[in-house]
Amino acid sequence: MDSVWDVDIQRISSCSKSYDTDSVAIESPLSINLEFKGEIFSVGILMRTPGNDRELVIGFLYGEGIIENYENVEDIDIDDNCCHVKITADSNFDPVEHVRKTSVSSACGICGRDSISNLLRPQGVKIPTGRTYALHNIIKSVDVLRSSQDVFSLTGGSHAASMMDPSGRMVLIAEDVGRHNAVDKLIGKCLSSGIKNPGDNFIVVSGRASFELVLKSVRFGFPMLVAVGAPSSLAVDMATEHGMTLVGFVKEEKISVYSFPGRVQTI
Image 1 (cartoon, rainbow, N blue to C red):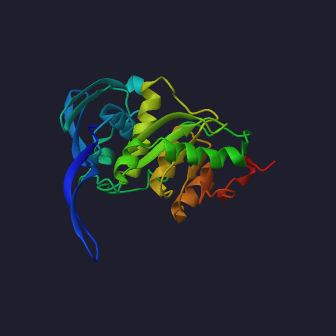
Image 2: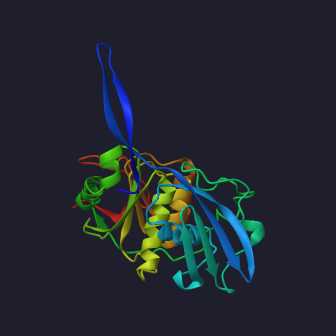
């Protein structure tokens, strides 16, 4: 598997030492150069797990507001750890807004930005209303996600994001060492597959619900984000402001709902 690296280790306990081989998730840089109206711009370096790089870049550009759809991408050329993307002249690229000052680590999705003012007002797909989701299907979706994390099962060191249908069945999944990268890969997979909005499908993430994950999910139009762990205060604020149901701390029989609980059906 290209996303996993086997390394020789020594296991040490209070009474013994032994040699073994362990699998770790690969983390490596991906430099993104953007061609827009005949000029080349460096929009940042993503620290990611190799695999689905094309989808990662598409999802990243969409989440940044640089592109509105897959049709804005004219060409993508990826060579090892370098990516060259040509976008259409009617794309929303603004060098002042979108060129990063530093690399983007696998733990930070907005590193290098001079301002987050525009991030707090995401433009994207309108979140649908009226759909409800059965509690048992929400709980089931987390179990489905966990059983489908191939990289995590080998390494214990990756995150996952999945799009689920209302019955809790998986539609698409993506994994990466970074939470926000996993979401970018998932949204990039959707756009590349012709899925321009999630409809009634919802997103499930393997870790906590940070502001960045809610931001990306709101922009794509997910009506509900389900997280295994806790949300942050800004994540709750953004979900509440934009009409998204935010779920955290999913257990065997209960969940915590931080915004728009009316979408959760208990009977």
